[in-house]
Amino acid sequence: MAQLIHLATFLLLLGICFVLVIIDLRTHQIYNRLILPIPLLAWLYCGRPSLPPWTFRFLAVFAIYFTLYLLSRRSLGAGDVKLAATLACLTTSWVEVDQALMSTWLCAGVTLPIHRAIARKSGKGMRSHRIAFAPYLVLPAIWLLIRHI
Image (cartoon, rainbow, N blue to C red; front, side):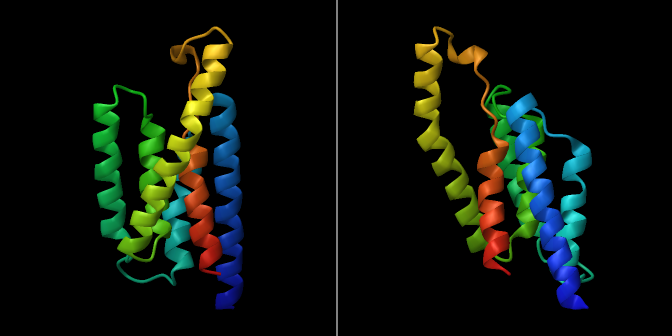
């Protein structure tokens, strides 16, 4: 029964991540109703302990991304902050948090010059081209989920 709950939770998390990426790519918005189930599903995924082991990792990632949100002058959206913090619930150690943070920013850093070149070539500035950040947040989360199967 526990394996069935684990598999069902994995599939739900994967589906939510996929929907989040599609919506962010299309609308540049991340809806709370899609983010809020992630901590509950992560709690089920890790076996329903009384105090989830990811509580402090959630708070630390929230603090990091909230600071970036304040410093970035709204380049990073509030939905990205909430998504990053809730995806930290899927980590099992501080090492995984570090790996997820580094891979998120590495992927974004590699594709940003390509995005800028496309914006420059189209004759529009970067101000008119918004970047969806959810795919960069979700990719490491999916990688972590697959690693824990």
